[in-house]
Image (cartoon, rainbow, N blue to C red; front, side):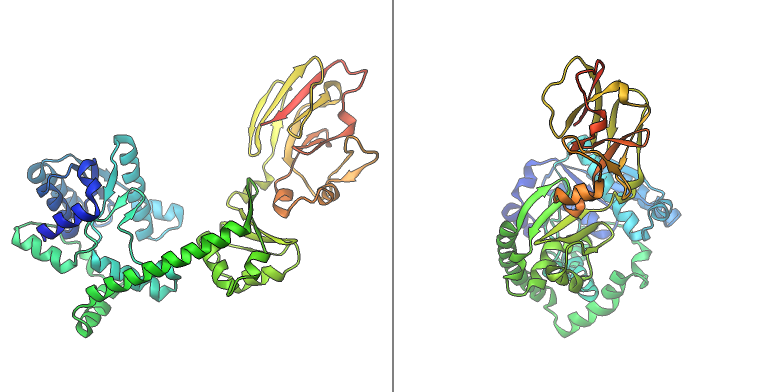
Length: 439
C-alpha cells in the first residue's frame, strides 16, 4: 500500500508535498494509518484530535493515545480540543452525529485559518465512499448525491479514497501499527453502521470485486454529472436576470421552454432546502404572489419571473430602531442611517433626503412599513397608502417585504430609499436643515 499511496500522491495530489497540512485523527485505524503514511513519505503535517466527551473514560483514553502517538512515534505537533457535544446538540436541535460533525469541522477550519494550514486531511476511504452512496440512495437523492465523496472539497483532502478498509488493515498489521477501537462503530442503531455490518458484506459476497465496480460506476456518474452541470449552467446564464439584495430573479420562460422543467428546477434549487417539487413546477403557471418556502428560502412568482429570497432573517421583520437625537449614526438591517445638520440643500437621491428639523419630533422610529401606513409623497398632492405606492412603483414581493419607513410622531418622514414625505420638506422659511442618509 505504501508504494501505491506514494504513486497516488505524486499523480493526483502532488501539491500536498509542498503544503502545511493538518490531519484529523480520531485514534482509529484509518486516521492512524493516514498519519503513518504521511510521515513515511515526509509530508509536513500536524495532528488535530477532538474529544467529544461522549464515551467517558474511552474518550479520554483515545485522547491519551493520540497525544503519545503524535509526540513519541510521529514527532509532530498535536492539537487537542474538548467539546460538550450533548449540550451543543440540544442547544442547536441537532443529532449527536451532526453536532459532532459541526464542532469538528468548525474547529479544524479555525485551526487552519489561525495557524495557516493549507489543507485538512481526513481518512475517508473507498468503503466510506460506498456507504455514503448507499445512505444517499436509500434516503433519495439527485445525481450529485450518487457521485461519491469528493477527493478535494475546498480545503478538505481525502488521500485514502482509492484504498479499501482491507488495504488499510493489512498495512497496519504489516507495520505493527497500534490503534484504538471505537465500540460505538459496532452499534447498529446508526444507519451507516447498519449498512456497514449487514448490507455491504452481502453485496461483497455477491460481487467480490464490488469496490472496483463501484469506483467505475462513480467515474461514469461523474462524467454524466459534468454534462448535466454544463447544461444547467447554460440555462442559468439565460434565466438569471438579476442578482441583488432582494434575491435572485429568474425568467419563467426559460424554464418553460426546456424539456423536463422539473429536472432543471430541481437541479437549480435543490441546495436551498426545497422538497415540494411539484408545487415549484406549478409556480411556472401560477399567479403573482404565489410562493413555495423551505426553512431557509422562498421562491416567489412575480409576473413573468421567479424570485429566490433568503428568509432566514424574516424574524427580524418586527425589529425597529429608536433615534433619540439628530446627531446619531444608527447601524440597521438596511444599512447605516446618518443624520447631519447642514446649511443648505445639495442634490437629493434615493438614499439622501433633506428635511426641516423643526418639523420633526424626536425620538424618531425606523421600522418596516405596515398595511395601514399612509404618507404624503413629496412632489404629489394628497395622501397615499404605502401599499398602493409600492404597487404603483411595481416593486416585487421581496422588495415590498424589505421596505422600511422613518417615523416622527406616527407620521412617515421617509419611505426609505424611495420617497420622502411632503410634510417635512425644506421650504424658504426653513432655517434648520437636517440631512438624512442611508448607506
